[in-house]
Image (cartoon, rainbow, N blue to C red; front, side, top):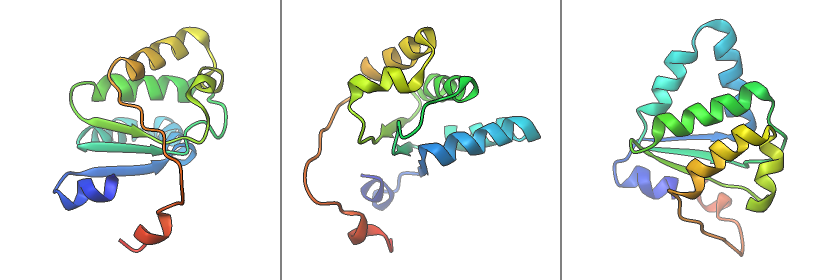
Length: 126
């Protein structure tokens, strides 16, 4: 989907979820957070890959909530995960923030369940 969006002229920002949230935590610490968030906000499509591989800490939860709030109505967000959606609540952690995050995701999303072979090898050199 990201490859197709690029071909159609859309700006796409792709990150593995662990790397994305670790990078943004570092940016909070070194003062570059607003710059990094602005870079993500300026993209037409944000792809967060491998969501839920590790539980979120308190800072990561707030970053995810902020990303979703800032992008609402401004750009698309695609989240991939091998973890069933009904387990996301537990991975996010804090019940109040998990409710807020999942509320923003559920009410404005399209869910696509994929089954079959990976396409990673086909597009890895694009």
